[in-house]
Image 1 (cartoon, rainbow, N blue to C red):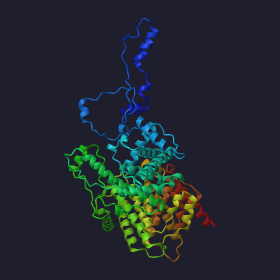
Image 2: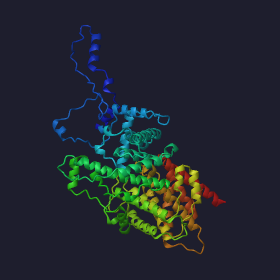
Image 3: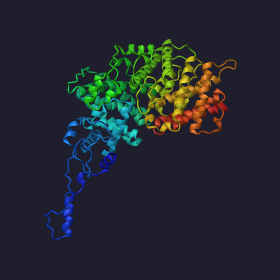
Image 4: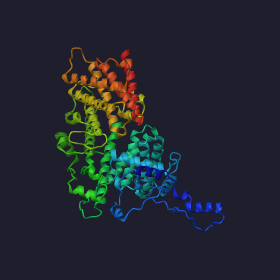
Length: 607
């Protein structure tokens, strides 16, 4: 019933559009009964609506009557309400709409001449964005977030993210361009005011705006948005290096402002960590050099999810007393990462967020080592450092992923499970430490033809224990999808936006298929190892289940006897999985690239 009332409130007109009911009734009675004076009061109930001014944090007024809260209930209410779909603090008011319009008017141009949607649509977009942020980039404290305190560019960035999350791509593009123009205007104004060439945005909200815009630009296919990736990266890195942790003491329970000071401190900490992961994701998709290094994060790891999502100060204090705050404080980020590689992740009690951070750091270490040793072909002996990292990743994968149940609803990590993002990043690390494929730089073209040509030029992986272990992990990735259901997987809302997983799926598909091609090119007198035979058996079983789930009944997919035929079927299954994700244009482009590569390879085999 409450949901229906909230829906009616959101659909109702403003109170100043509704005539005063008592006046209407009196006028009607005067017309029908001439004997009744205009100033007389008939025996009818008095209905009147007092026109209330539109406040910042109030939903549009409604003719539905509201009950008055009792004094006992009012005293127990928190000053900062818990986030819910009808949280008044996340509603775009009329005053905020005027501020947004005025801000866009100051920076109007041909590129940013965008018509803002209604404030109801903006409020819906903001709520969708908050839902996305709480699941994927938890750097905003939802319980205390109030739109009245946000700068216009952050509101527009949240609206753009929410529109993308709601699959309204044109609205997302328009709001993205409007927000970036506001960011550019603020940067230009700060440069003129200070007289410096590069003035970073030092506030936390400016950093949150840049992070949201960067996440949107990474997954977009439109060239007008892709061209701004490097500019957003430069501004975000400058802001990250100026926003420092104040290391304030927030554990005094008697201090009334301790919770809010802790939220500010933890928001800065999480902001830097989430920005590091997003910049690493940018490096994964475009092979852009890492602009923000892991060694620059010399701070404690983020707190637990329960402590971060505490709705009020009382709950936060109770969690603190129970020992929920158990942050790891490494003296050196680089030495701590080396300790993780030496001893494994099972030595430490990590949350899912901490797992993602460390795995991104490991991927960054792999890229740095490849740049350090320079280009080398697949026949050369790999450096010992890369081999050591690959061994550590495979041990983690074998221990956790084989028993993983991949809880998609929550991002929590138990002792024997890995969440989806960690599982995906682990696979990327295994593949990149076992191959020399670096074709992701062409993803910035967003052209399936360019990606296909890069795949054809890439060398085949060598037959080694390192490549076999990476192929085994790629088989496990497809096995997890088959367990969920390949026909339902691309439509699950939580999984669609795990972009790390789709990059992992693309690299797993390419590496696994090309590893099978290498097996088919071996000499007749060279036998397969026991591990290679095991991977082939697992691949045949998973591919057969995938064909049945996707209902692919093409004649070219019937035979799976030789490794070459199995690689063709494997590419067809992965291409179908990626192409079915029509919600993310970039992922669909990856599926088109696989289909084009499969067609080219089939043509070369037949000839």
